[in-house]
Image (cartoon, rainbow, N blue to C red; front, top):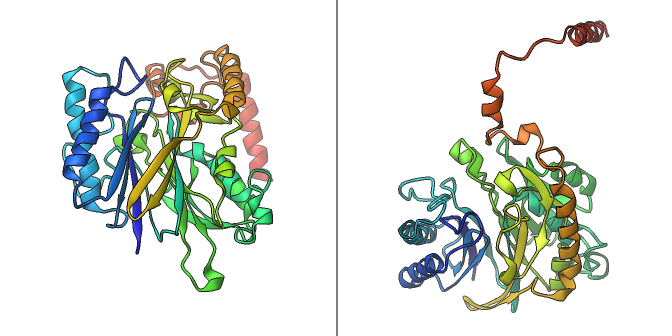
Length: 385
């Protein structure tokens, strides 16, 4: 019997700024899901990271279920009412439409969901990030499912030795491609290194040679709020679901991918690069420069439609080294102020105030004659070639 794991998140108000969620708002979201989800979902869990409330739901309605999506939408609407009552900052920020229209995609909240055939024991980890973008998952998902230095199971576990299939989205052109690893490893890296455009959406097993359907084993939310809204309204703050064990990365291999605080885009006003810091729930608030970007991991086991857990996976001194390194990187980068590469390059600042600054001085830039002539000569020479 197929089971669906749906994880839907949204920023519907926080305090004092973009720091953390507010208890009464989280409680209202959870209360709504509990009251109205009976007969629709078999279990759920409410969590948060930074200013984002996260709903993990178990059901048998498949992906893109209008009823399940509407449940989450209405829960966030209920929470927004409480956020507005308290005057919280950005109340309802991620709810870009006035009413539900059959599918939550394109309406603001982020969503990651997969329909699976449950194993005898079905462990999985839900990773939740704040102050960054979907491409922030490229590095750790690649490490988990394609890098034998991170995941030795790719070498020594015969059930993993054939590798995995990656579904990569071009979120600018709205296209996708499937690449197998290890066969297309270098091609995959060539794409996902451009993390603001090419993002890993899903990972599958490779069972086509056994005449069995490929099984979805990882999925990432890839909603682009800036593209949806037409202006900057915050980074996407993505979430991901990763199944583990029994022919998949072990829990330790899935966690090891976050032991290095790699650089991601987002942070303050969605306009800066910074290290991704793995933290436990107790440290999942955003403070320094509205960050730094953080990730939490909650571990569950699914059985007969019910969830056991979660385990706060990063609440462990084993990740203190990663946190110390991230703090050192923060100290280094912050001394650069508004300069690149701490600040994002111009082409990634489209939905900030930078275009308004350029518009203000439009027509006031003067031609540098010497450079203009050099450019004309260079172009004419190129034409001859």
